[in-house]
Length: 173
Image (cartoon, rainbow, N blue to C red; front, side, top):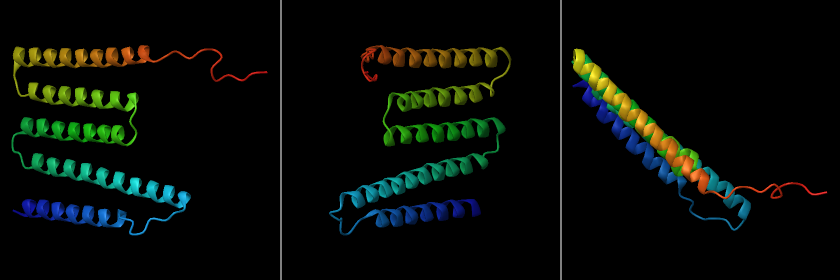
C-alpha cells in the first residue's frame, strides 16, 4: 500500500516538475539581440534535455520499484534487466535526438541489441539443464548476429561517404 502511494506521489511530483520546467522555458518577450537569443536558446535546450533525462530516470525508478515487489527471484532479475536496458536505450535515443550523428545512431542500435540480449539471457536462467544451455547459446548467437549487422550497416555508410583528398583542408605554401 505504501509503495503504491509513494509511486503515485513520485508520478505527481514528476508531472508538476515537468509542468514547472515547461513554464520556465517559455520566453514571454523574445529580444531582438541575436547573441542574447542564442544564449537563451541554449539555456532552453539544456532545460529540455535535463527534463527528459529526469523523465527517463523516473521511468527507470518506477519500473525498478515494480520489480522489487516481485517474489520470484528469476522474474525479478528479468524485470530489472528489462528496466535497465530500457533506460540505456532511452538515454542513447535522447543523445541521438539532441546530437544526430551516425555514431549516436550506432549507439542506439547497440543499446537495443544489448537490451534484448540481457533480457533473453535472464529468461534463460529460468530454465534448467540442456534447455538453459541451448537458450543461452541461441541468445548469444542472436546478439552476435545483431552486432555483426550493426557493424556491417555502419561500415557500408562509412564507405558511402566521399573520401577526403590530400589537398582538401591542407595548408598551402
